[in-house]
Image 1 (cartoon, rainbow, N blue to C red):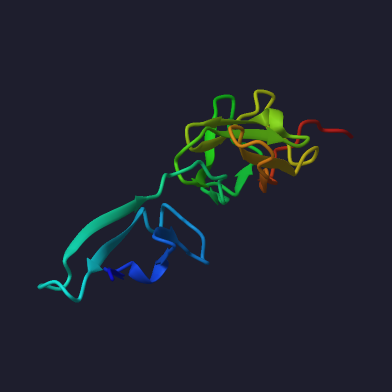
Image 2: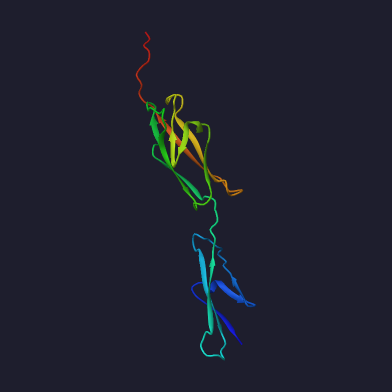
Length: 178
C-alpha cells in the first residue's frame, strides 16, 4: 500500500483527497502578499527500501489582477493665497497621490462649483484665475477630486475635498469723496 504525504512551507494549505491535490486557504488569495504556494508530494511504500520512494514538487502560481484604487491623498502645498497674488498661469497648490496596485487605468476628475479654476498636471493640482482674486467677492475656492479605475466595472469612486482660501489684503483707497 502506498502512502501519500505532503511537506514544505505551504503544506498545511494543501490536502490530498481521493488522490487529488487540493488547495485550501480560508484567508483568500492576494498576489501582493504571496504570489506562489509550494508543496512537495511524497509517496512511500513501507515494504520497499527508502522513505520516501518518490517525491515531486508543485508550485501554485497566483495571477495578479487589477484591483480598484484604495485611497487618494491630497497634500496641500498652498492652503491660502493673498488676493493680490498673480495667478493667470497655473500655480501648483497640492500634490495628489493615488494608492493603487499599478494595474489598470486610473482616472482623476475635478468637480464642484470652482472646478474650472483647477487643472491636474501629472500628480500636481494647479490653480489659476485669469480674472484675478478678490477676497471681498470670493474668499475660497472649493473642489472635489474624484478617482476611479474605469477598467473595473462598478468600482467605487473615491472623492476628496480641497479648499483654497483667499486672504484679504489692505488695499489703497480707490476714490476720495468730500
